[in-house]
Length: 366
Ligand SMILES: Nc1nc2c(ncn2[C@@H]2O[C@H](COP(=O)(O)OP(=O)(O)OP(=O)(O)O)[C@@H](O)[C@H]2O)c(=O)[nH]1
Ligand SMILES: [Mg+2]
Image (cartoon, rainbow, N blue to C red; front, top):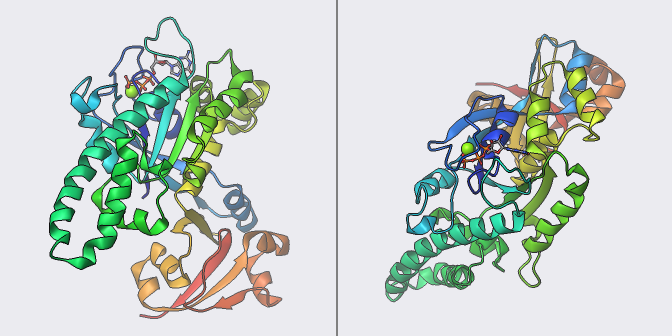
């Protein structure tokens, strides 16, 4: 399962967001370093397409796609030199697939620490860049020595030098002008900033109107001339506290009413999970029947047999072909067998690149 890690300064609202996303009971408290060891939970990826297919098939069981959320302890300026919890957070961040920055914009007299999201961003970026700089410097020195004997290391040397220049200037790698090839070369060295970032700006419950403005401030900061983070970063503003309160309401209609009443639409949590999912290059295919309707996660660019393998390795090994139809076409026809009868199911072979929203059935023999 893919993992998202929540990263930020103490009191930014990471544990509160974690609880809202996972229904978990992590300690959220108005003092720094309330979280020492990471909390790990599962958040479901909401998908209206799945709900509607399940309704169509009268499925007894509905299984949403899910992601893991890791609530990591807070970091402070100087963490790389042992301040606060020191470098404890580094190992936790290395283990996640996507990083979610939680940046505080809410003001509360009972909660200590800065309330300017740009200040939060400055410290988080600095600490992560410094940690990466240390890794890259070490690696660069090794590679420089090795490259004298081994010419094939030229590409790696080139990528490490570019990374070093960016990090030494305090600039994280998601903002560096690196080519896709250079990024790929750097991937194995476990760099913290050579990955995509979702930034959540945590806005106070009395400042909901300021959400667009706060989002824009942070997005502009990410977009500094010449060093734009481009597609690597997305920014979402929300009031974590209100979202967390809404998330505790069991009844979906009541919950929707509360969010609607506050002018928060469907709520920001769903939007956030969907964005993070997409940012990672994750896509969904669906299966549906009276027993179960289910959303399955795959990486963009996967073939039909690779997707079959998400269900069971036997499906991949013995893959013969797939029957495929787009979710909305199937809904319009009203039933899988109907789609089959009228010849609307496509037969696809092993080279088919699965599309987001495909409904599939696999034929296999082992
Ligand atoms: N007013 C207000 N308070 C909030 C909001 N979000 C979180 N808080 C409060 O701020 C305090 C800190 O929140 P946490 O979720 O514990 O913060 P954290 O980022 O996990 O902090 P550490 O674990 O110490 O790094 C708690 O008392 C929360 O109740 C918010 O949107 N508005
Ligand atoms: Mg916490």
